[in-house]
Length: 126
Image 1 (cartoon, one colour):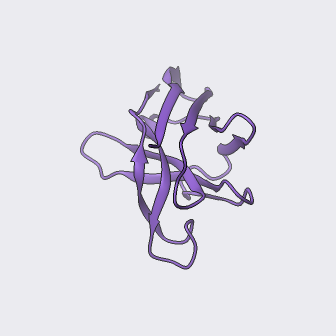
Image 2 (cartoon, helix red, strand yellow; image 1 turned 45 degrees about the vertical axis):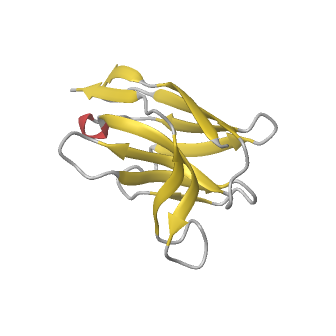
Image 3 (tube, one colour; image 1 turned 60 degrees about the horizontal axis):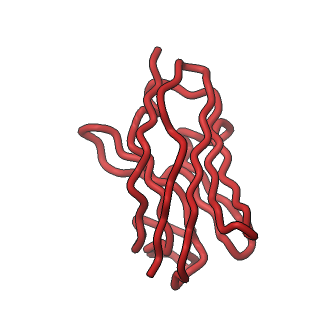
């Protein structure tokens, strides 16, 4: 059984930084994992994702250049480094593994996942 245990999050002023961590235990069908977020009244969106096998990454346009996803393969931990945070980044952030996708590869047109974490809250004040 796959379990995702997140840590990090919190409140920060605009321009600040936060780091989220996600310990992934268990085996998944595919190698893609990453972070989604959902703000009140908005749909869930993919933020950043990584192929755990080869390290390739992909980012939402809204966070590119500010967020960095990385992994510690030895510890099976996923990280999301968030810099230059903006009020519009305020949301619940969910670690996800074993992506659902419609493209040729699990980072290609992904839209969800089979396994989710609880979601730390990130709040950015102006």
